[in-house]
Amino acid sequence: MPYSLTVKKIEGKPGEVYYPLQLNTVPIPTPGPNQVLVKLAAAALNHRDLFIRQHLYPGISFTNPLLADGYGTVTAVGASCSAAAQGLLNKPVLLLPHRGWASDPDGPENLGRDFVIIGASRGTDAGTAQEYIVVGEDDVVPAPEHLTAAEGAALPLVGLTGWRALVSKSGGNAEPGRNILVTGIGGGVALQVLQFAVARGCSVWVTSGDKRKIERAVEELGAKGGVCYKDADWEKQLGGLLPRERPYLDAVIDGAGGDIVGRTVKLLKPGGVIVSYGMTVGPKMDWLMQATLKHIDLKGSTMGSTREFKEMVDFVKAHKIRPVVSRVVKGLDNLEGIDSLFEDMKAGRQFGKLVIQISEDDSSSKL
Figure 1 (cartoon, rainbow, N blue to C red):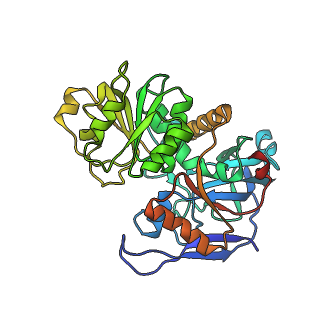
Figure 2: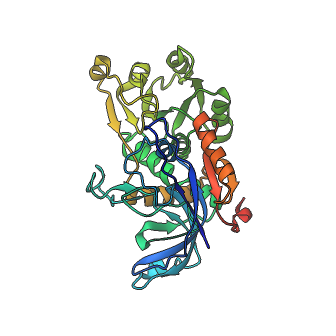
Figure 3: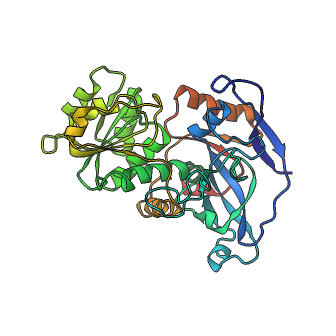
């Protein structure tokens, strides 16, 4: 029988407990009306999954499968499916990583009631850490043909989050020639923002605590340069790198929080934008009067709508963008290997996404 992967509940306080992985055998589900059955080839981890194992995330389910990112092949369609869904039969697809946000540019239409991210969630039984999954026909999109299974699995959640942060929320700064700072390069969202911004003609600058990650961002992905955020004067170093003809930042896309406002306020142009999609340093961020006087905008952003997801996938397809994969382990039953992916995430060793290959596919021909 097929496998699914959940977390097992054990006693412990949030932040101190670490829920073990639990392998389960489950029957192959049958798609109902307006549903499709997907055989998953690959799934990917996000920091959200680590937070779930540490009980630092709300609404955890111990019965629904883990993980929000997935790539697979439609193997059956249910009754009443549209012609478009029927056309996906035996075709590779990407799974939508959320439910309950269709198109509203301001945020989920019913935030707090209908919106949910899939994977080990009480709000939906969907999760990509399983061999087969039934989802609504609107919860899949055709996978770009140039992507391998691992690359496809690496895209959905971080691609959507990065697209909204850069394109929808940066105040029109995702344009050719604009100077964009992307912090914490090496993480999945940061790398997708870098790839999107470079493809849109932006000049991208990066930070990291690992100088080799900065070098890779420059040498392999088109960043203009970067600085180590462990240096006490990193913002001054960054200022010295900016070009004379445009010696300022237009926007900062940040997932760390902390003192990012104080660090970048002197570098940002008047009316510049800081987009915050996460706060890994801490749950609070200082706001300075200097930022107010300079008319800096601070915008929160997380995930994105189904409309934005489709826009992002179309952009990836048009520009032949390949999400960065850090490491792949084979098999949902390879609990030791999957645990090692979580250890990479804990230690911050990854440069790109951490992926589980669930089944064999023909993606090797796309490399």
